[in-house]
Length: 121
Image 1 (spheres, rainbow, N blue to C red):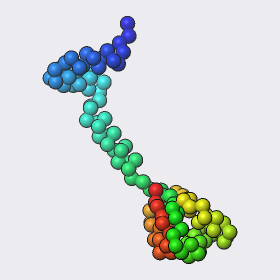
Image 2: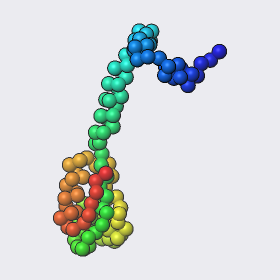
Image 3: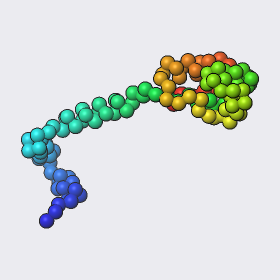
């Protein structure tokens, strides 16, 4: 006979807090693990996921100085005039993807100085 997870959870729900603590201790001893280790490991994984190392620079709008923004896009990306204009005209669009934080911040500052609206994701 096989016991389902739902049956186990129903049985645990009927236990007192002391009984649950004793059950956890017995499981830790039987399987050689600790519940605290699982929480710490889960917290470490969450911290690693939160620490972003690659960023995308997104041009959201050209703003009032479209010509200056096109020049800034050309300088930052190495695109030709026609391609840079197309990027600006089709905003929102990604200018650079997978760059480090310093490069993303520098590019954002450069474009905002030209009058563009920029997001870093």
